[in-house]
Image (cartoon, rainbow, N blue to C red; front, side):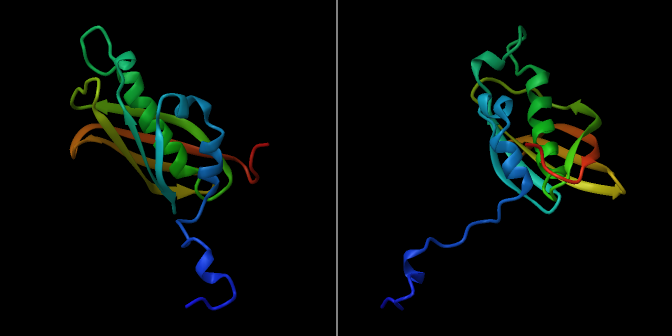
Length: 148
């Protein structure tokens, strides 16, 4: 029975939106490649991408640049959950397995350490639970506000 205050008419609350969600909404590059923001909160994030035929190199496998881009997007989401505008100061990746067109890749980013305006984040890229690549990103907060 309705309480009369409209509480039953409201949808249940979803996960809270963070500055990372706002940043991703403006990230045309990642969204154009089909990257999906799964979650972003508390210095961690998950992003997914399905490999398309246009992402495959001359060896018939996913070009490493696309795997790096997915990991870098998850890294950016994780380090921007708190709100200050934060960018990459550097990053490296180790490729462990190849992937192909049609594969769905998932990148899980986690903050490992932070001090002042600097942070270190690890990102694991998987396909069906198999580790494809390990990425380490170094971040730097550049602004206490958000970009326009």
